[in-house]
Image 1 (cartoon, rainbow, N blue to C red):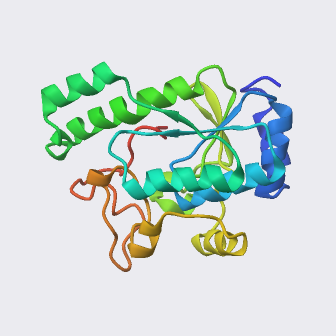
Image 2: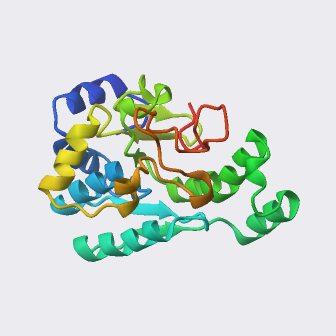
Image 3: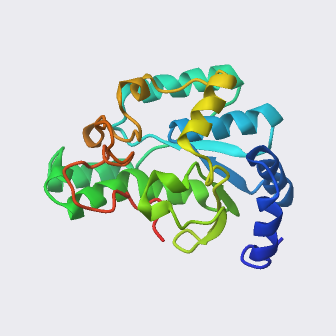
Length: 234
């Protein structure tokens, strides 16, 4: 199946299916060319369970930026153990990180949006491009209600920056629906979620949110920006 052709037909087919069924269809239509990027967040843990429960041939990978919470890394190990699978981990290039820190300092991302985006590029965007290379479908855990930036996304769309189809199986799921699924299926999750951390990224760039705050408010809280790192640019 060609990548950009028949997008509307594929979208119509997927809209008739549950997230579980849709993942199985995508894996069947693009054999050996589907990858799933997990940040170990609640949405991603749901998708990991959906993939593992069907033994789908979808490669699961994660990005270790070098600045993750210990709880996130511990969850990665627990997830591999529970589902008897190996999550492929990509790391930033050593020389790029060393040059970034030499230029900006260890926490230079606090100084400007430009510095923060440079850090995100080195630690996340570049490793992601390596992980996606040679594949045809990128599965993500994006949900429409997470932020205004994501509210108009489609379940399946073309990612121009990475030249790949992006599939968002949980796009129309509510937060309550996701939590209910996690509880029903006893899916392991990051204990930081119980402490008010909703969207969890790098430790220096993530804080717990206050009651009533947007779920993305805890990411790069010192900025007045779109709260994105460049992985899901449009």
